[in-house]
Image 1 (cartoon, one colour):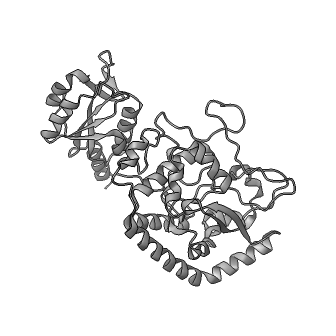
Image 2: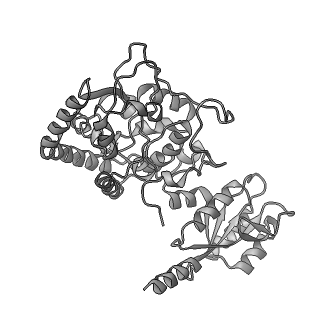
Image 3: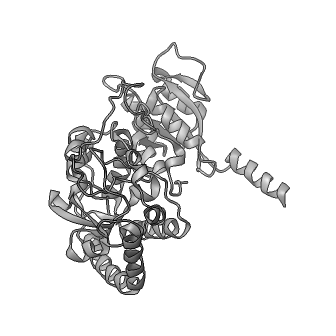
Length: 392
């Protein structure tokens, strides 16, 4: 049996039925596309070569042979006979071989943008590589009234059912919090919701009150987590009171997580397209949560935004069902990393520094260290942070 499994894996790695793919470009975007395809043995794509952007390119680029330059594209496509060409040029102005690509399209060769390929492979959008115009003219960024109506109805129905069925558990958690530590049972915080409207988010309190100024990032507040709070966080049970927010109309069951107001203002200034998150109702759980987890600095928040933008673009009932199933699995297995979206607290006597401590990109060695670094096109990050399933 072990030998059969190894044989099947080896056959999958060879990708005998994969579509032959040629990548135009040798820059960061092309490298990212090649890496993402190679990282998925079950992917039905096989990179057979790369077309260099300059005539003095090396014979190989990121593990694939360089088949020629842009001026030789017609001959390269004739010899390689690809089923798809991925355009990943660093600079297209006056260099994009439009006629050759059109001829290839007529012959049945698929021609795709690198950003579209990465979106399909990773389940996120490379926000540093897309332009406002491409988003504005995209047919997929549109109002989805039917989905929004169905999602709202299902959210209300499930919230009512959850509050009724879980009422005994909610009472037990409240008693445990009261016996475990002093302070209120619920943590209440103002968050930004649909179209930027402010609402009061409810959670079970999981931390002691701070002794002095602190930040909203959880890793700066780990010593304040109560005994029962650590258990509630692991299984996401501290989020259960948000079913009340769903009934109030503040949230849906599925959607981008709502941010504290100071963080929202900061991210709107620094994270590309961040304001688009407010175009949909926030959720108790979301695509970014099941795919990436919780953010603890600006770099990680930017990574989460890539997943949130993907959800806004592709939201559907089927995607919501997938997110819900992944969330249930995470709750049952305790599959949540130690980082949380923000630290909950009651106001300290010395006040509370609401803005997170942000370390400049080139300020390594000063202040706290970033746990993840963004690749040139923002498609990097620690793969172990992705708690959800990967796309094939």
